[in-house]
Length: 181
Image (cartoon, rainbow, N blue to C red):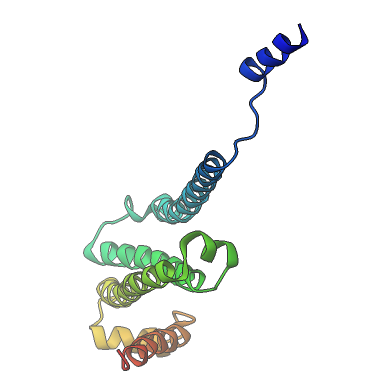
């Protein structure tokens, strides 16, 4: 009777730990599922934050309180500034050598994403500058050169000199980084 009970336990009881090839495929399936879950979590956090930025922009009335061309251009400047700043943060995180991120995606893939995100970041920052100057020039009823002068030296827009230096350094860094390429 003990032999039949043992046979039943082997057949119907709790499964024994897999051995050999079964164990390695089970481990790789668990690792793959874990990597997929981590990847989805990272994608969710990154896109969720971007969506939050856009929602904050919309909630601030940037779609409903647009009554002129100047308003529309200034509104576009606000969203390109927000998303451009977020893109700059992602840019730093892509090559920050965070161990679990590097293990998850690999440095080669992170470097490629860093390159493409860098292009997007620069485009967004430059669009922010152009739409800001153009939009506020229309709102203030000034020429573009006069608006630039007002922004930089008029004391109306605090932080403009710092932003201009930062944008210049960003462009210089990009140009310097591509000299060897």
